[in-house]
Length: 428
Image 1 (cartoon, one colour):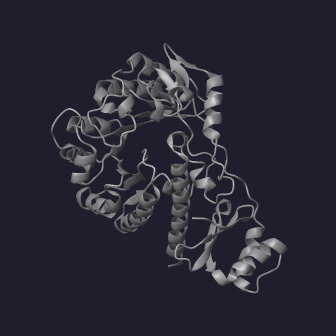
Image 2 (cartoon, rainbow, N blue to C red):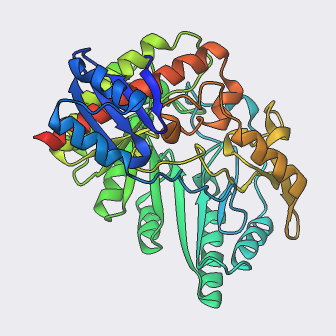
Image 3 (cartoon, helix red, strand yellow):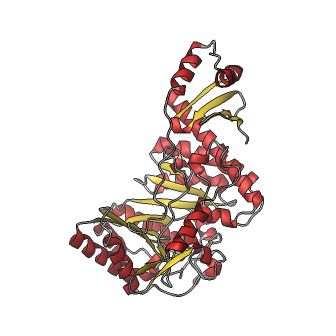
């Protein structure tokens, strides 16, 4: 999708409506969007080209008031917070063999020694400029394979929090197959935030997320674990990966979650990133089916989201902050997706290591930050640039030129559709 008259003025874009029957005036930095008739397009263009006021009084008042607003770009987030946020990959071992897993070909069997985990925790709590610390346990594998290490790490985090008076937040991303009731009870008691990776529907889960080492249906174990999380009132979200196999079943996924997991509040439906070249048809299907699921979710109290939806009201200069991510070998990388020495982009993302303490290569960190700030050539002119913010740095490294173009078109279509949805909802 191409925009009409991009950059009429700084932060003023005119987009074609999805049905082609009108135009959308969009100014992201002003948090303003509205639909107007196509026959008024010339008046809008003339206003910005020559200052000619529209005959339409409502449009004239709108444009004059908007034109007076002072604009500021989004605040630059701290690039790679090395003092307050840590991502800890205890292991790359996994008991599943997901068909779309980005890490399968580069896994190791190493486990991060608990002494190095303690060193990372000490490093975080030694900086007291921010009175809150965040620790995330996730995988290039399944973190619950290292359950005892997680328990020891959480106990140490709590100890350091009491000693320093600095608060903390701990989260775990899990495939849920190893979650027993005993573990869920411990998670609830220790206020751990949980994100469950599950493809929701029984046949899809068993097809796309099979066990690696045994003949059994992973769905049965995940379903049991989710219901246990609900039993103990553990706040959690479900995250499903959307592929060509389930893209047309997103509405069914939301309905299933609503019927079987009462009180679930967040369902994240993220389109897959893989090596396929032809993405246009997939993204088109995804857009149509996502918004069907999104509408149903609104009606039943489930927030259906994805990484783009989350950014509509949170404008940013860069897609993500980057990470202080500690790998099982004790290296520090900027992204958990490139956490193995077998990954071709590993060296480009590495900027330190953990031994007895955390050691950061600041020249390497500077290079990583520069690499993460690179945008595509079309970003400056794009109306969605504050939403996707140049896109995921990891994704850009692996995407071909054709895939990147398809993704950019998808982003623009998604943002436009959300704007139309919000405008319609606000006018009702």
